[in-house]
Amino acid sequence: MTQTLILLGVVTAAHGIKGEVKVKTFTQSPKGLGDYGPVSTEDGRQLEIAALRPFKPDEAIVRFAEIADRSAAESLKGRSLYVPRAALPATDAGEFYYADLIGLKAEDRSGNPLGKVCGVHNFGAGDVVEIEFADGTTEIIAFNDDSVPVVDIAAGRIVIALAPDAESEGEQ
Image 1 (cartoon, rainbow, N blue to C red):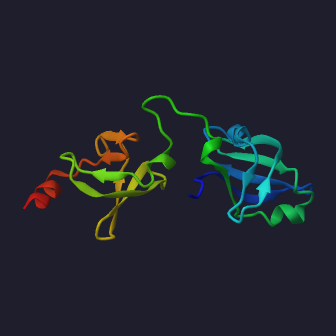
Image 2: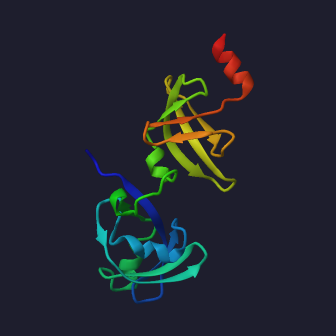
Image 3: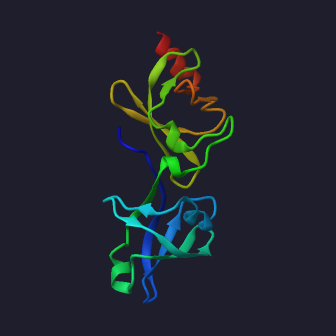
């Protein structure tokens, strides 16, 4: 079984001449990037964070122990930075990480299967959940309490509240 990796940030540019990089972070605060131990890139390269300082609300300046100069830092531009799911703290009751939703069954309010969760995204206007239906098509649905009233990690499912006309079409 493969280990689930969680995206924590993306290197956007080299910073200065001593090997530092700018990282767009996806953690609650930029400092959070350093809370989970070494990060890895898509190709499996491990990087240990030697120093980190917040730069903007969603950016940090990072120095990796393995990166000594600007040239090496520039080679990281565009690289995504991951940690294993197991590195994240346990969640409290009723809490979950978006990564935990991937692969869950999607059902309508009556318990009829719709498909499965294949992604959770935020394109700037709010969180959305992407559902892959049995026929292979996908649909993006607003991820809020009205559209997704139930998230049941233990049961491996979410409930999608379809628009009334979509539900009645499914019954015909």
